Length: 382
Image (cartoon, rainbow, N blue to C red; front, top):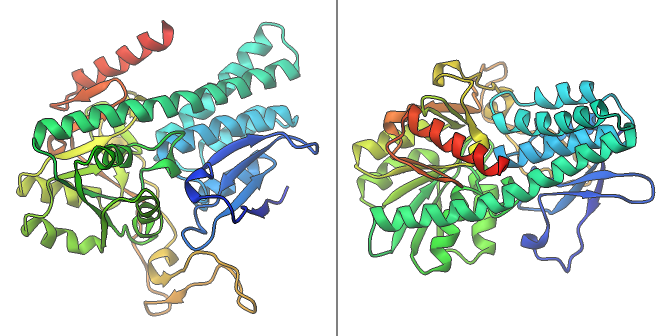
């Protein structure tokens, strides 16, 4: 079924609009998303009535960010189950919507397994659907709680590495409440530093070609009252050379068993710059982002995005009378081929620390990551 758009009320503050929520209107359950392709110019909610609509929202980046994709995937399975669609078919299409972000498949599997377990115990289709929805809601709660714990661990690490406060932090892409059930991953750490008076400046990488830093991180920083400055990605080197960066904080879409970090393209160059300039390079991500089944960075499937994202400049998708939506302004000759990977991979030796809700991994080793994952499983089992 086609998606429906509904404008948010003018009296709402942007920080009060959740990135994702489940609703049950009289016409049937729906998944409501804050459409991130329309930010910061316009706050619009996208209503998904089936898994196929959610798949399109994921591919178009209306909903994005590793933890939130996991939550969305779980809700998508629940949506298919509650509305009577083929759950396995929906799960397969959702899990394959973006291959690099491991959280998406994790969330899908969690809700799908709950659905299967309920049926195996003799439950009917309604009970199985309820089990899938309960699993999605539980994952949503867990991610919100994990966000808070990551912020605590990350702030403690910053204070340990950079005593005295006055932190000047460089971040890449977007890692705040727009990607999480809570206040985010790397951005949540910076926000905690801001609230305690220890953040001097948040440097926001523009994050080309889709400008998630300029459109989304700056949006969140402004509404949180943080001191922030936007820069183009290729200005980061001069910022390091001027001694203006105390730490780099990024998120992750997949962390492999050996500690390699797949994240938004442009992260790896920052890691190289940070190493050369002796600046801590810190990755903040929930344990669900750690994929022990993927051995190393070379084994990560890196999503390739359409070339027009590079060869055209597209403003946020604000409807304009008389202008067809979806077109961009060409900035390269017609027919130009573009290399447009969505992610790059940073090897573990360039990562100072990985901050999870279960604690900090430093130095980053396969053994330490496996222990954090085992600790997390023990907590869940308990």
